Length: 398
Image 1 (tube, rainbow, N blue to C red):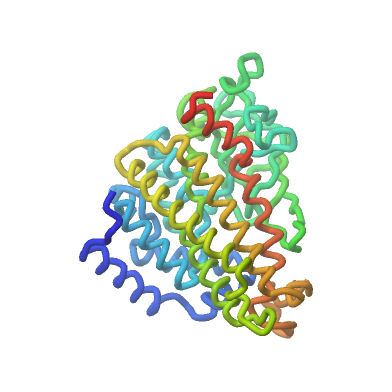
Image 2: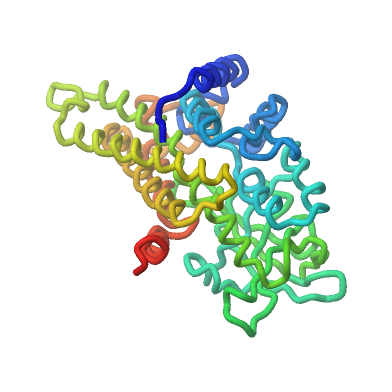
């Protein structure tokens, strides 16, 4: 693999960089840079800006309204967005459901749902995890029983990210309880406005409520909302998860976080010298930077393979594990660099309150909430322990 950018790729980078400078609102940039919580409107505004430019769906084919960029272009775009402190796009419709619909959905489903994902008319969330089915997702118990032209769904999903904003949810449901657990699962698309659905927020240790419980009580779902074949949902779920795990790696976001750590460490004093000159701290920064460079190369290989029609395999598990370790290390380094200023819990400031006063330097307010929130990275999307098992089986043959 040639890791040198061509003249065309460098020109593309400049095009993206110039557009971000001209288009990305300064107040939104500042919210992202300072780690403040984004509103639903913030996300929708950024979604609409990218859609108007034709850059919302870089990996989609042009026939569905995508940019159809190659792997290098997508990597450049992500790097520049992160460098500019652009918001991270909500991935559930764009990067997770859409590839499943393109690969396994009916043409009617593609024509119905893909344009609404682009327009922002539909906000999707993911109904996978359950109280008794997290890392062992195949143990899910939410039932869907066929009743004429509908499925009747009963059960519960949990850790449903941004479910409070969503008007649709894609769900794994059990349609055959009498077979091997992986073989009795189906993939349903469910309108969140359907009677019988209740969403209850879960307040996290950082004070935010980005995840939810979702309850289904005799929810009637049209059978036409079944994706692919009944009882084949595990195949579609694995396909989706490979895209999710690659996305979790977050190379661009880690690059931006690394620059923040370096900047803070160059300003904070330790023993009369900048913290960046402390041998122990400098060694940790060097190690995470080396790991990040190696992961970025692996990520490019995986995305390049996906661009040629190959579904990401165990390599996406490698990216998930390493990517989450790197991101957690970066939040840990920032919190250590901030020191005692990381202690105050400034929720009003993080929520963007008009009268909220910040205690300490601006980079301190989000350091602890970000650190604690990112502990989840090694759990969601399939825990790192499970990913290591996948790697040993698929690559090492153990």
